[in-house]
Image 1: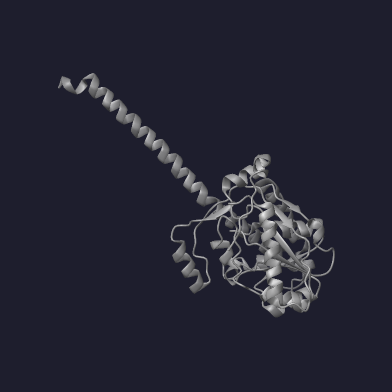
Image 2: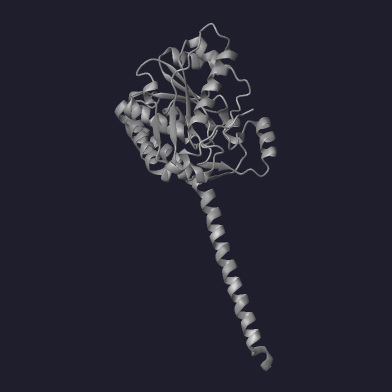
Length: 327
């Protein structure tokens, strides 16, 4: 009986209790970190739905004033749109320290096709939309993937902010009417499967070039730094996810992050092209222009730590920016 209370036994018990406490603490820390990493994208989705609910409530409250339940023109949504744009500007400022460089390259009037790199979750285009609306008094239309309109509750939000799925004829009409139009040649494939070196995945796409040629519209290259490092995609099983996307055109992937990295939207000068050029040639010019912006402004390979340094310790990253050739 007495042997159970020997100093050696008591020391062993104390050591085991100490190790159990450490493991429990680390388990709690890791579990909390995992929950936070995956919970922030859910919060972003909830914010989008909160905006959708706000727009629905706004529509219901304004119906009587407009004496109709069928037609809601541009003037109808002005106040709501400005409110949402103000919210987006505040979110951009305080969460991503977002700034726009080269705003003067966006024309004050007339059409322009904004050719953009597709980040993992393209919050940057909505930041740009808000700032164009508030500070340049220009409205931006955005081409989005079909699956967004299939998500319950988001259709009204997308329509209010002039998002559409982009049939070529509609894109040409939009530009000929003098609007700004944003397009991602890489599409969702680029958002999900481009790597840390920010490779373009345009796969010789020329549809956007055909639209620009048909509308005789300027083409403006745009890139936002660290747009792959705020939100990340779980890489495990990515081969299967890519196969599934090619079959269904729906992004069956798991997002995590929401890191407050520095985001800087760089708007390049309009691309000079001859209207007699072939779409393939115009597409190649656009790709080269976007790649140049990436190589000049993005720390490669992109990392979350690098994006955080760009925000809080920019002088450390200036010397580390380097070009990486893409195949």
